Image 1 (spheres, helix red, strand yellow):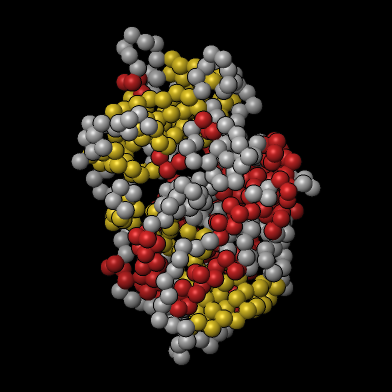
Image 2 (tube, helix red, strand yellow):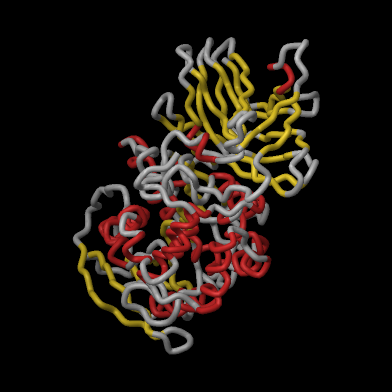
Length: 518
């Protein structure tokens, strides 16, 4: 399944060379969309803008920023924000003006190595953390910023994607931050780029090229990431590099109140990662809240309704009111907010999945006739093998699904490592199948090992007469309904070998799904 907007790994390899800018000409608009904000309503204050502002970082590097100040005479809390990968501080202007119009002093900056800032891109590593700390100190020196002590501003951080990762990494090192709002952030970059060891090359390639085109990348990152794209297999050194720049390696050190915002449709940083951040910070006895909506690093398949935009705006203001202004917004902000597409509304909860959901185990063997041997040949373009295998479970009453499904599938005959892909689908009464949130999970099996795989977190409501389906394949392009714009259907690296795999739908083959029935 290829088209003019789909890049194979060979395309990516060519893109790593001199002709990369021409090859990925269609990628920049997609990555630019990562930077955009939903429309924000204005507050009661007019905003003064100072640009540029230059701040000297810990190592002498110049970090360039824009300062947004409300027309308020008394000192106010501050918000520090930066952009996504490959972006600039200009991308944060709508968000910065939104907060400033509501009375916050906002500093939006070019992350190191991007835009007008100096230095080299270290993938939200120690250097970027040092930059954020220098900017916190700079804010504390402003007369119109409230402080809680010397060099200690009353401040929150808010940002998307790359601008979300820096929040968590900085908070692990610096307790001066009073509140975080990481949107579309990762938990473990090693998992993000290669979940269960399968390279997500459809994202890794364009992001790598975009970083080279729009920033000055650190040589260590270039030396580690380039070969991974060429081979289709990330090295242990690259995975360690990613983990060092991830909350997964420092969860116990993050003690800043955090409102985690993530999108059901995000195919770069799955909701699973937001769940890990939310629960991990919560275990530190810190105010940790979760908001899930139809957003993320996927644009055509993730419409944002006015209900969602308004809810998020109210939530972030309530969050800052709680932790920066000692307000009473806590009563209006649930621990967990889950957007439900069927009702275009948010369900408030104290847990995830929300109350009333129980994990139900579906036996894949129940979909096989008793007289049939429950053995299947899963193929990858071979003549006698199935390109996909599906297991169907009819729904007799209205059934809600919210949470992380888990698939257990005995396999054999791989003769090596096989990359396997799985998706949960709904099938309507006319037989039309839809991949839930366009999400496909990846795993790998060695020789005769079973596939035990947490699928991507999803939400949906099925009506009586519809069908819940799980489908597996050796190529994720066989499963995708909506390609990522500019990237295509194949997000993951296919196995070099084998071309087929035997699958058993016996008693050990199960799909576990969190459900709530009417």
